Amino acid sequence: MLDERLEEVKRPEAPEKVQAFFTSVAKRYDLANTLMSFGTHYSWKRKAVKAADVKEGMNMVDICAGTADVSLMLAKAAGPNGRVTAVDWNEAMLEVGQHKIDKAGLTEQVTTKIGDAEALPLEDNTYDRATVAVASRHLNIDKHFQEMYRVLKPGGRGLCLDMFQPPNRIFRKLYDTYSYTMMPRIATWVTRDKTGVYDYLPDSIRVYYTPEDFATEMKNAGFKDVKFWPLCKGIAYIHTGVK
Ligand SMILES: C[S@@+](CC[C@H](N)C(=O)[O-])C[C@H]1O[C@@H](n2cnc3c(N)ncnc32)[C@H](O)[C@@H]1O
Image (cartoon, rainbow, N blue to C red; front, top):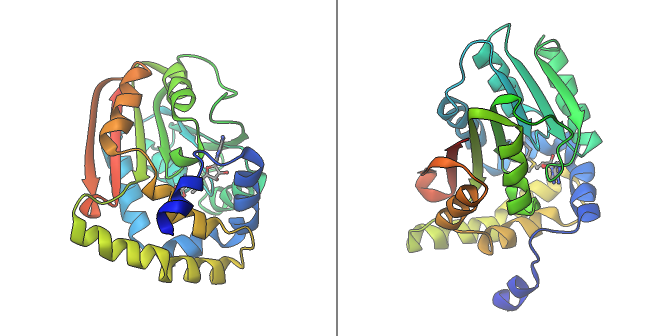
């Protein structure tokens, strides 16, 4: 039964469906994330920003920035002269992000921009760092990596944080049980979502790339020195590559 349903999970979902997901949950997205992950998403994001090896005054882009958690962490790491462009195609998510940017007093450092990750409205060879967190499953991975590569300066670093199926069978079973039962219920209740995004998520994690294939896609886009490593027993991975 589950296998039949997985057969129907298309990767990625239609753009209008993805937009509807995030418009529906935007205002309560952060709270749902925190409850679903018991707060660990912040620690993953902090680890990702550390791995990005941000230097003072860098110019960076956070692709699929959503509510701007990673954008804010990047901006803090780069200090007052650093700049972050937070790109997302969903207005509702970026509105929440803008509110957080204003509240953090980082309006000068972080600029939000509406744009498609597969056709970024950004110049070639511009950024020292480009990040994307928990969004790759919504994208055509090849186009997305090509765009990330295009906007990076030569020598710039691309970084992805995303969720995968944990490799250990016992842990995977436990994780599946949680992600197919409690997780969608908590998140749907918190966000009052009616689009079914939180039922789609565990399916999409199952049919998603392996971390190894994901690394190959990065290399195919031109990235060199591609590295990846697990977080939290392989529920999430960080991938990095250099232009
Ligand atoms: C799960 S959220 C992640 C947000 C944020 N990076 C974080 O870590 O909390 C996925 C985000 O990707 C955005 N997104 C999905 N497809 C996109 C596309 N083609 N172009 C730009 N943004 C996209 C959604 O609007 C949403 O804000």
